[in-house]
Length: 564
Image 1 (cartoon, rainbow, N blue to C red):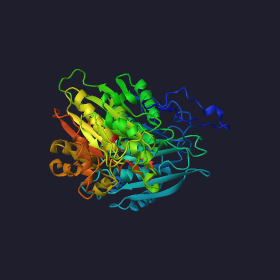
Image 2: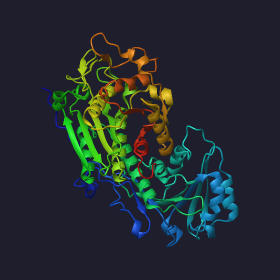
Image 3: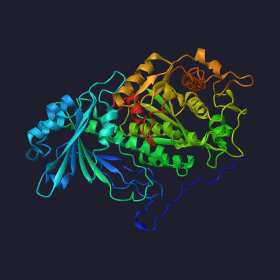
Image 4: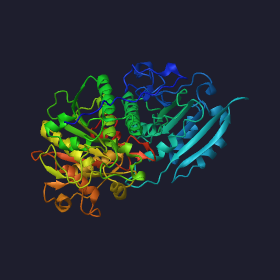
């Protein structure tokens, strides 16, 4: 019998800052953002400036404060070090001069300067222009105009959210109090708040990261120049921002810390904060006994046991017609390639291989906070694809939870094995299931097929394909369809000794679609609902950082308030 070692998190100590080690608080109990409006509509403010991650040092972060009213009390320099106004050029030309007064900048911004910095922005490509304003004999205020590109293709977000993320990242300047004003063109603010949050990751182990946080005050402006003050819209922005930063923090965490056990502990802390959610775990040898041969086979060679985490939420309020959805996330906390060992360069960055599970966690709990009116089950397939005496091997035959046997011909094609168990569990055990969504950093070939900004999606009906495309264009988690043709592609997995192999024989034959079809093959045969596969290997990261991809897509698919 396999015996798994104790897998607690590593405790890091810093003798110079003894007061900052407070580990009594739940690991996941950080708040990424807050909403400040009138007292009657104010949401909870950040309980403190630090983001706790186990017993590591606190992380410097930018507090995102969503506001519904202009704050004109006190002098400008006492409140803000800088102001950035972002929008498309036509909106900037129309609204920027009108906003100078409520922003407290009218007396220090000559009209000629205001016009010049707006005119300097390229209308088609966007960009930024800035000036320093003398607000007193001793103080200056930085004013930045950020232009979103107006020339956008039909497969790009109508508010160019990737450009918004890039511009927002420079909004929090050197000072500790900055202001960002976004001209919405009447677009929903939930996806815009999420785009802003992507610019401000939480995780860092750099020395000196325990200094004070920064505050970024965010306002959204309607086409008539008034502020967005709808509490539901602003809550959607706040919750989505929190979910994105949670998902990105998990992806950024190093594998020595974020083991399968620690991942489950993170989720357990979130469940404690959300009474309407129940959590079940199947761990280690229990997976093997119950027939989850994919998750168990992939993870049994690691010190920390593989596990399947099952989260359940019922927001239907007794409505028998409410949709029932299963979210299944690939959570390979580190992928060496197993005995099909990756190269040195190819292995670096494989801490990101749990990005699908991270996106599902962020999306699921954000949906719960926004009180989505659906029944939602989130299934996390957690394992480390490690090398050891008990690692699964090429030529092994695994029996997945679907009952189908899989001949392993590539230990580095492990994600589809754990997801096969996940979708089989969903379709066997969830009553009246309408939709299964699986999400994974599954194939490098996805980047070749749909690029670094769009996930590749594989769908068993044109209706769910269209729904997913629209959800991506609304949320900013963009996606694009892959070839759906299981009858033409499943021969790639033909095996002489098992029901199928786990890797294709011809990598030039639509291998990203093939990988998705492998997962589809493990849906229960009696399942008649829709299935959506999301391969987000490209958009899941931006350079070395996680993006929080998946949170917005999930919220839009679930028709969460602020994301419909």
